[in-house]
Image (cartoon, rainbow, N blue to C red; front, top):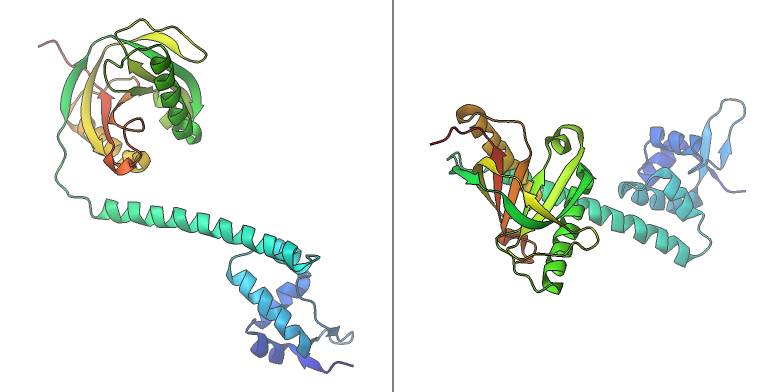
Length: 272
């Protein structure tokens, strides 16, 4: 018969608190070797310590209890290792997201207080090839990347040259309600044929207050915020979609740090 160990001694030996050991018993993760039917005291065996150490480390890696159970119940080392590696891959993904968020927050805290220049621009009607869709906000970046690539490929296949940088038009509903109309287009002087999602479009004119955003679009909200604050203070803001002009972007550089994007806020301007 294995010598029984009190829950207190087992707690000290395993570095799992008594509260945690009781919880693991309740959820069936680490059951005592014996429970006194008279007083309910839990007792453990010395040979359960290695199991407790494994559980402690897996839980220290934030592995959910259900997944720890699966690891312990794995039929062979290969299956066990697959489960652990899958969890480690998720942790690395989460860590990358956390690092990116930290860098963005540090950048926000260290931003210079000097306001950036705002340009006023009258944009005339523009002939273009375009892709239009109603898009969920969380899908917007992936949709934008695919649309730009498709437009570029269609122009190349038809031997047409862009007459200006690619651009996008985004309805306020995307920001206000998480879903709305989006248009990505490339100006062209030639007559393009409509193929698949790509159509000919005359982009309507607009009066815009424009601010330049440098770098990745991951923190483009900072430029939107600064431009929006400027428009609230100094402009007559009007209902209408915002515009983005990709001066240096996805089609020009694989390095998002080199990108330059003009953000256009719709405003009212009287005739000069």
